[in-house]
Amino acid sequence: MPSKRNVDSLKKTKEQLEHGTAYYFTDFTGLSVHNLEHLRRELKKLKGDYVVLKNTIGYLAMKDLGYDEERIRELFTGPTGIAIAFEDPITLAKVITGHENLKVKGSFIEGQYFIADDVIRFSRIPSKNALIGSVVGSMNIIGSFVYTLENIIRNFVGTIDAMKDKEAK
Image 1 (tube, helix red, strand yellow):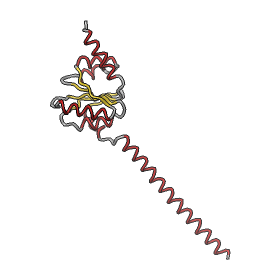
Image 2 (cartoon, rainbow, N blue to C red):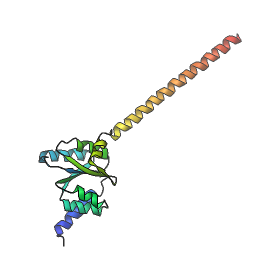
Image 3 (tube, one colour):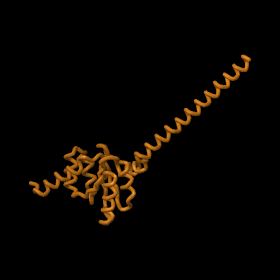
Image 4 (tube, rainbow, N blue to C red):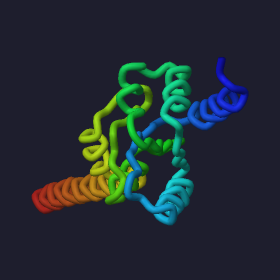
């Protein structure tokens, strides 16, 4: 029978994890306490969190949240920390892959499992704000193009009107 402490720990862990949209499982071996605190502060600014869990508690919490038992069993080996994204998962992937002593084991993003190589590829995707900026920039280019076409048509019509007036005289 599990102790009250472990039951409380499992409940607290499930509460920490249940609102995440993405979970990045990492091995934090070689990361100093100072670097770990810096990482946590960085992730908090990006609406994320980083938790270090006992493997059994983490496994049971993820299992209770409905994640694939076989996958989570593989992820909870050795020292395990989970970076949790509550909003933009791509931004957190950039931060996590940017830390040299943090090894990504795998991830669940919106319920789907991804291997470590996929997380590295995600980290290369431009941020949401950069993508929005690209779309807005593209719309400005389209607007300029439409304006140019309108001027060409207006000039063409003006030329034809002038030629018509000249022939009428």
